Amino acid sequence: TTAVLAFLSCSAPLASQAFSPISSSVSTNQRPTTLLFSTTEEKETKSMSKKKEERLNFMKSEQFHRRGFKEVRDRVEKDIQTQYQSELVNDLKTSNYMIENKDANVKVYLAKDFGFCWGVERSIALAYEAVQHYPDRKLHITNELIHNPEVNDRLTEMKVNLIEKVGEGQKDFSTIEEGDVVILPAFGASYEEMEMLDKKNVEVVDTTCPWVSKVWNTVDMHQRKGLTSVIHGKFGHEETIATTSFCEDYICVKNMKEAEMVADYIVNGGDKEEFLKYFSKAVSKGFDPDTMLKKVGLANQTTMYKKETKAIGQLFQKAMMKKYGPAEVDQHYMEFDTICDATQERQDAVSELVENAKEYGLDFILVVGGWDSSNTAHLLEIPHMAGIRSFHINRAECIGADNTITHRTVDGEIVTEPFLLDIEKDVVMGVTSGASTPDAAVQDSLSQIFLLKQLNKKKEEEGQKA
Image (cartoon, one colour):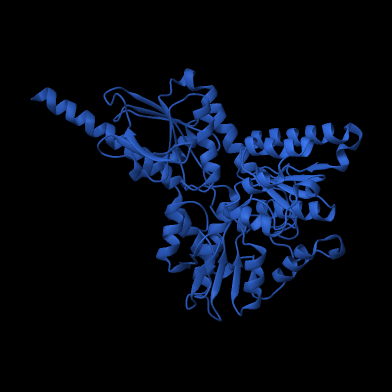
């Protein structure tokens, strides 16, 4: 079995710094030979924005840690394997991604890409190593490490203090004292948070996913070229909050509808007051659509639906072409692919399940992952749009012994409804999980379904005997 933490001692898709650009051609399954942690410094600061230059200076501090702590690595590796790996999921992978539980009369098809990505594995490992490296220190984390309840609960059990949110976009950092340890989550931290922590006498352990920092480098390039960053993402999501903090001028669009509003304003202008009212929480301070939408660059929250991001890119390219002409479009629009490979691979794998749903005879597709996980929510959208019955659960306990299921809909509503419509019938199901979901959570969810069916089967047998 591949060790969960193998990436900490071997190559991985990182450049010379964790915040250096990463080639979009890098696959999560095909890692380049660049060392995970290189000591090479970025020298050409003149080609950087002020915020990027200062961010790199924060990272040079002896109290800023991104390399982990080798002396506790073996112990951490064993802990993570014990807590998060799954024999059932391993059996699925070695059985051509399909198993049949004959005792429960349930056949399961597993998506061929699912679960923990290497960036999440890396983040968990660094956080666990920090806990064991600093046994006598008070540890804090600026946000949930990842969007998974089991992992975050485990950190709470390890006495890592989650910084309290006080009001919209505000946090209470008053609990952090001199000498404490502060963990930055996989989503990254805002420029303002990094600046604040740099001024305190604390140890900072940075677990930011390098795919996130790739987006930061993209918006830095926008600034240097005089472009406004259009970010395809949710303005209140932790990752997007961090990304926008490194921008000068930006506007966030969460979907195609909002992108069309921006594109229409680019081409035709409009009611500025009404436009700014609608996007009031999604634009930079002092945003002026009349001047700041003349030149734009597209970036995105790494967990968004890739097909939508591509469609939004095409929309803006056509808008600029219509406004300024084909010959000038390159002077007014720029884009880079900043969707992480793991996100795309998991979306493709669910699409494959959907395409084969009739052949397999799927009754439904189960999506396992945090309810506030963006990448998991997008996995649900794929079978939903295809008209396939599907459920997004965050824990195995969402499947009740009374044959109900509590799940998150594509609209974000948490509902409870009947689960197996004919519990006596054999079940054929598909299953996948988000990039922040441990295999153990998938096993627990499947086990809950197996148990539900077995109990009903036993009840039937007892009824026949009577």
